[in-house]
Length: 245
Image (cartoon, rainbow, N blue to C red; front, side, top):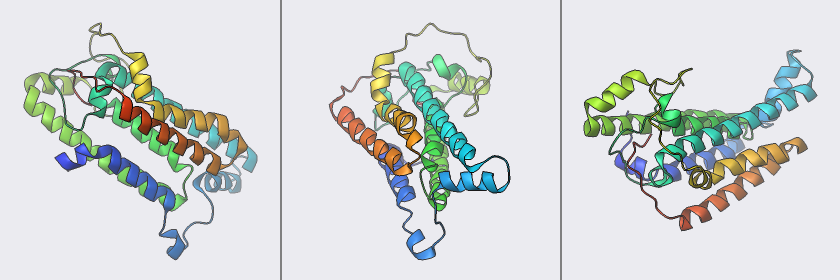
């Protein structure tokens, strides 16, 4: 179930390929599974069940997408601010000591949870079959990465990491912090720059969603991705001694 070193090293590229396949949904050309996007399909379904009008359902789903995109960006930025942007971008697993600060007092893997929330937001812009494909594959890949990291950290840090795991849940956040605040100082600006893609997607949902055109938001996603590649290419490779989670 654990991801290989190759998968971890190229995790960003693998995520990108899965998203591209989900948006393309090339199988639909032959199978003719979908005729409308997930956003429209969900709105039509809610309308048919008399839960709400089609217009109200469309707005409700848009708000849901905005909340998901903002929550993903905020959670990942919170985690990166304490973990360090250098560790977040590093191709190799890192972890010299545990940093039980920020979101890591509530759950062990805030970055992965943030990515999954982001995936749910993007899925609203895909065809239904593409959305299901993407959610399942990203979810499975995330679990493989988490398993690999936790195995690595358990072997490297030993009992201290196992004690941390016994107190802090893996993916479902605790309602209250499970550890005392160590007083670590977050690097908010560096974190926000490191997570610029996720903030760009959130802005695309927020600014372009009210045109009720999925393609416009997708264009915003592509622009955000391009900007993030430029930032990633020129950003200094800062280091951190915290766990990668």
